[in-house]
Length: 65
Image (cartoon, rainbow, N blue to C red; front, side):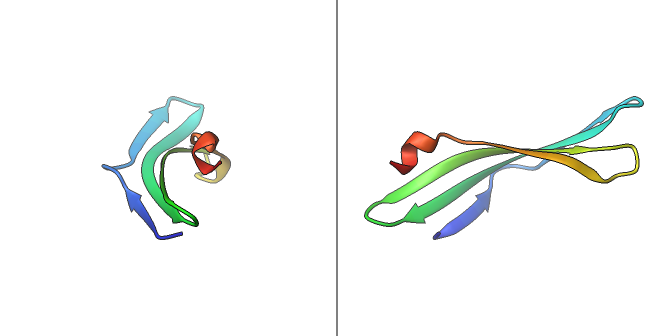
């Protein structure tokens, strides 16, 4: 891994009575035989106590082939 760069600012979304989400975007750069940059969308779900209940990571895995 060469670098992890945050893109923009994370968004905090608060739902009335159902907890909240934080949405964040990153560029992750890897180098093996060639340099590959993955654009990643990360989502954290929080319960009403502020504890993380779920983390979801979206990226295009075909770029790693």
